[in-house]
Length: 151
Image (cartoon, rainbow, N blue to C red; front, top):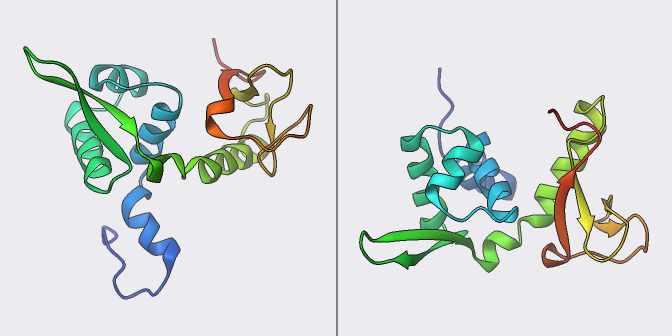
């Protein structure tokens, strides 16, 4: 039996948020957007996602206002996808989920570290730099390979 796509009977903000971002492909598309992926073919190649599934997720994220389509070519018409403010505001939740996954599901160490640009630290619990203690924002970090990355 498939789970319903909506949770109208639940008076719960978690349930409402899951209606938008509650499947694995959607969160991975958003993660890739934070890592600088912008174009359809790049999302598809990076994620290994079926084209029809990716098209559906990108459309839904645009419809929900987490991504916006921006033209970059006229003939043929092509667009790239950029995070909106609403999408960027998912950063704390996404990083917290990643850190939780690192703690419980990365026995060889984190596959990706979120590095503080211009510092030798990485994002830690509380979204602060492990080296300088500064509270970090998405534009101040970049993903780098961690000790658990696979070849």
